[in-house]
Length: 330
Image (cartoon, rainbow, N blue to C red; front, side, top):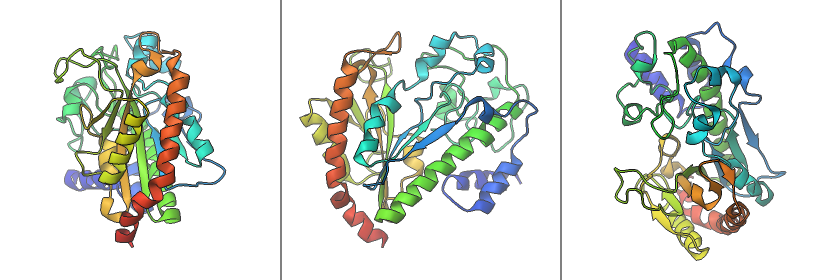
């Protein structure tokens, strides 16, 4: 039974079949507490232009900044410290894409509360009051680093929770927030692909301006932009090369797949042979904000303008770049 259930959990992210989703949702543990969805109204938003004019979807899964008092009360950390893992203001930087005819999916709950850029069940057993079910992935590198579906730490390895959680609490967050978000993401990608025959998902994040000791350039400035295509497996190389050269021409340093090659969303939603391409973009926080106070500085306006220019150029040529993929899918 555990093996069958694990297969269903693996399948849910790749399938739009209502029956399989329902099986997963009814299997999740129930909680007597207030539904997590009621803490965030709405939990996520699909911002749509008047008309979708290009085969692209922008996604900001880590820019949520709504921190309920009940969540803060369970934490060892003050609200500002909790926000250190947040991709602050990425959703605001992306708002101009709506004027260009591109939709934006943005999450409002914080990454420290639930990380949708993980498998449904990547959980650290040390965080919970009881033994976790066998289908839970307790051994991934992300779990080992404290950054599972329910994170244990914020970005600087500061533990979030003062007391262990119940598994029912984790299950409620996954059922009420994680699964609806991924359904919405799948639905939007399918809608755009139906309109244009192919689709590009741009999964947008931010990164600290300095590296960590295990990187090749510890404590040195990171590139301005990191493009992650899972080492060539998730996106057409023509799209990646176009973005790389366009950012370069706009004056930004660009790295490919280093130190970020693409996370769960980039890996999971890529189906190149079926005309679905994904790429992860990491933006250096030092370009647009004070990283200690999490406030925008003068670079914010300049970066947003430059992003709009780069994106507009991409949208102009994207149908041509996707044409081989569309032909293969047909």
